[in-house]
Image (tube, rainbow, N blue to C red; front, side, top):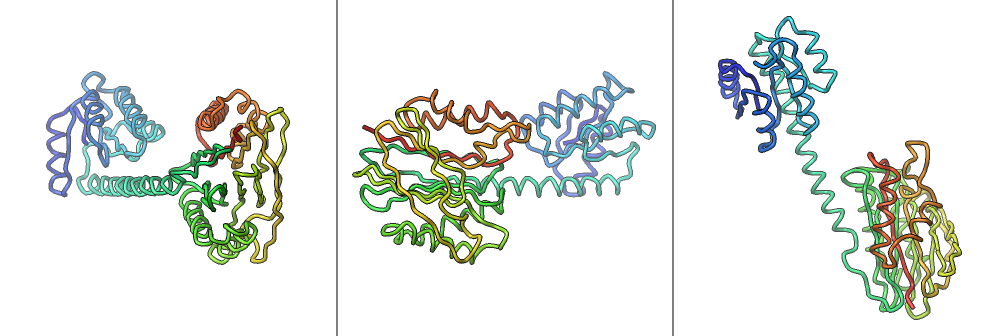
Amino acid sequence: MVSDDQPDVLEAIRLLLKGAGYQTETADSPRAALAAVETSPFDLVLMDMNYTRDTTSGDEGLSLLDRLLQRDGATPVIVMTAWSSVDLAVEAMRRGAADFIQKPWDNARLLATIEKHAGRSRERKSARSDLEFARHVQQRLLPQHVQSLRSLRCGGRCVPAREIGGDYYDFLDLAPGRLGILLADVSGKGVAGALLTANLQASFRSQLELGVKFGKALLTSVNKLFHESTPAEYFATMFYAEYRDQSRELRYINCGHPAALLLRANGTVEHLEATALPIGVFSWWKCEEKSVALDPGDTVLVMSDGVLEAGIERGEEFGEDRLLQAVRTAPADVEGLLDHILGEVARFSPGVQSDDVTLVALRCLA
């Protein structure tokens, strides 16, 4: 889009860009420019800094620039100024303009500047589209259905810090009345973390037959596969458990993960601490499986460190005490519990999320 209040300037630039193969929409005022960006996506905005209402100071142009960048900071804005308005161009660049062109312009330089920034804009939008697709695929990898158990309700939430992330959870159907519960946190974020997460999930799914018989054998095999298929600097912390409906027994292996919390119906809290090293650190690996019996009204919370460490960039973490308080004030159902905790985390640490936030909740029924 080209924005300028002089019709001859608009027409000259339109013809120049048409000859270079660009499709151009024009606007003759800041109001028209803002209306245009509301209805159409643009690869780039080329805008004058002075308009008829304010022909010398550039304040109207700066206001338009601010509003364009506030609406879509990813679309580059190139500003046009007179030869005598270098200070105005510097201020525009300080506020976020991608580049500036001085009037009267040189056609070759104008085209080169537009091509550079429009090309980068198209690449960024293509990358965002790819990431959005990857986010959709990763969300579909999360469990869509969970085996119905007589004595247990369970659920999970995963909120990546970026479009895609390095946390995931899963519920594994081991046998009738036997449910596998898994939450893993890979040492990486974004694309790298997502690829490693997919690798880890594939390792689990391919070895699931072992889990039907022995949880320790399943994790030993997964560790070997993950270690062999990932760079040495990557690993995953993990909490894996098997719940048996008939006996209400929870057998668990904690692989270097933050301790899961067992909140008893009587108000006491137990910590299900680490029983093994993280997955993928060494080719050899051993673990200890522990067991707890759940009673009606007990709740188990498994979380990634992004829950407890939310707000750390401000110097104060959400922490275990706030998490326990959130549990005590949450609705009784599992879905309501998860939503309430995530809401409390978001209220405590508003704005930029620095780490993936993942939760799994189990609640034992009467």
